[in-house]
Image (cartoon, rainbow, N blue to C red):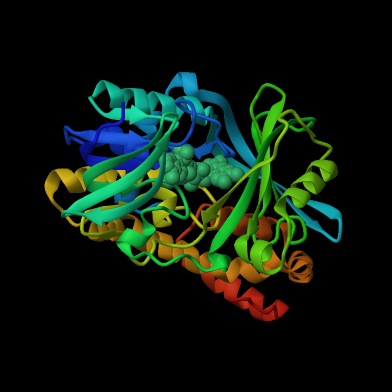
Length: 401
Ligand SMILES: Cc1cc2nc3c(=O)[nH]c(=O)nc-3n(C[C@H](O)[C@H](O)[C@H](O)COP(=O)(O)OP(=O)(O)OC[C@H]3O[C@@H](n4cnc5c(N)ncnc54)[C@H](O)[C@@H]3O)c2cc1C
């Protein structure tokens, strides 16, 4: 039963909202999610890098928090496959160039089960959780908030002192914090489906860089270890909304190119931010978390761990009476901004087949492979940025804003 009032209302029970719910020490907490069941379906590649892969790349405080989220969320029952390597393919003018693989220890998880376990943990700690409950709008009301909710019984209203928008991008709480929408170049529309037919090894994930097939992003095959794979691609929002490219058509083209056969009827798709933290992620009791706040790592589209970290940070902030915005910017903000600058450097190559073709003709394969791995892992290595600038001037590509 949805309460009439609550101290903290969490909108959305994905990685960010579920983690906040399971970590907060507030005693009167309600989580609402529009999904019918705890928890699915998910639109995701379900890949989570292992700590050993991230440890050399992340600032130490962020790494500590990610290790904590992994410890809390990755149980043996949620791991469906262990990935050892990442194979990088580049496709230019229809020709596939195999750059070989790099060490890439990661889990493929059952994300639905993982989140459902975290939510069960929150319920055991006294959090009220309601699925099939869509929050359709929230306003400031009497020093707190009032939200309209649609559930199986119709319309109802919930009042809350604190409001957490963990509902993905763009968030229903965004207007209450005054967070402006991201530029279309700073968003991606990503597709997801399960498919069979991939003939490669079970322990090797595949990424395909192809500015025609996945402009501004990449396509992927993440084997699940049982003969099926999570497959999909990310297309920059600019290409979808300004250039009118349909990501679902590209998704089908990708399946054809890779000889993959879908085993789920529909292609699921969702918009994610590929930017940095939003300009205003909290304001007078309203907070944005996870994708709603812009926590996705913009060079690779990964956002599960960083969303959980934002939930962990808000739980601590509410416990210790700190500033959410300040804590988020300290732990995640400068890292995400630095990654975004790297992504912006790579954008011209990700959007231009000619530039990508030129890159692989003038640069040794091993170097291109190293650059892609470092960029995907959001490396802080200054050589990467210096090298990228020199290369871009050599191949004379034009950017897009
Ligand atoms: C195709 C695709 C593949 C991806 N692959 C990976 C990957 O392999 N690894 C990785 O780390 N990241 C991946 N990501 C990114 C990752 O899924 C997100 O960054 C992460 O899930 C963000 O968590 P979140 O809790 O902020 O938001 P979400 O996971 O989007 O959760 C939001 C929740 O809010 C609920 N909700 C939304 N609106 C309302 C409303 N109005 N009322 C009530 N409930 C609402 C939704 O039902 C949902 O449960 C992928 C994203 C996509 C789209």
